[in-house]
Image 1 (spheres, rainbow, N blue to C red):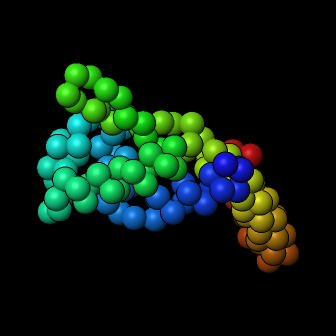
Image 2 (image 1 turned 60 degrees about the horizontal axis):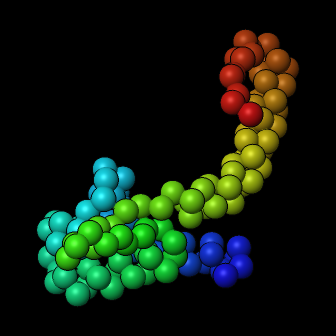
Length: 121
């Protein structure tokens, strides 16, 4: 799977609120399909379909513990999304910095105090 295909699969998986809720639950630790299905008004087969989407996207993995197949979150797929988003955050930070500078120039022309801002860039 190419990097682009991986991002597509990850964003498609994250587009559904049920799948995002499942991931949020798995942040607390591994869980069985039954445990993951509890808060939802849907059948276990429906939850299993959501889990397959998350698994194909690499967001979760399923182990085997006797009869139990616990699911766990896989952070590496989310790291790829974070890397992709980071490039855009840097663009927005630069845009905000330019806007701050322009506002400071306008304030100085008007004789208003210039506010110094802390940027995490």
